[in-house]
Image 1 (cartoon, rainbow, N blue to C red):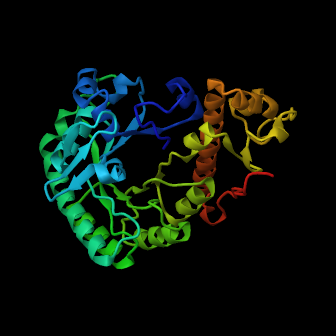
Image 2 (tube, helix red, strand yellow):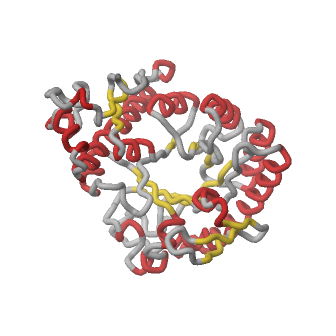
Image 3 (cartoon, helix red, strand yellow):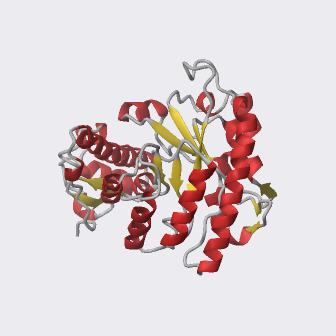
Length: 352
């Protein structure tokens, strides 16, 4: 899922996202709550109408963003008090208000409110955080069940007027395998149509991330969506799909693009390097995206060196295309029954 934090994938209009084959976008409740505001989006018909996106949308609960504020937040049993990164104003999020916000935004998939545990953390801290997330999950589901028919969907957006959102639970437990198992089992007992693995990509080594993902997946239903939040590199998403993950999101393809780091079938390319100034070849000769079919490495390097906005746009389109092509190859392998032979993705350091 490409990340469209502010109801926008930076620099890429929605028609191009459709052309690329994006099936679902991710939006951020915390940021949209602050600007333009949930009530404003609701009045305009929800996120689908507001951003002119007819396909699926997933919103996170805002828990990770509040966690990222660090010194600007205070966590209690009732919820989280935090200060806006925009103007310093004080706000309060709890399970119920996180549900109200996401129902008002009108995404197709919404997330239970959780606390993301920092890394490193001792076992007592991890367990306390996990227990709090479980209590918040119960409150999230209760409020959602009582208000789930208040979604501001327009009839043009869905062919099922009676349809509602899907609320996913989030498994926490830090890097402790035993607590991850307990969190998974108790979250399943609460009952959700899909389950997310949260609390990863918070500074831990990637090898440890994989261990936690693999051990957690063992305890999640194989016949319901399993969503790994906040990963990863092209190589990692292929690996995690092979382990049984169904959904992933990551800012890496778009963020890296804005810094001139591009993913190709021949490895990573740092387009800012002077060696590409006279390279008339395509960015990736094996890529069929509109960027690789039209522009040379020399031109892309020139745009980046000149600080042209178009550089960010073209780089982002290519990186998204590469990620989406990778996932299409994964799905094709699954359909052919060749999950053991998932597509190989070259992952190397930027070319010298």
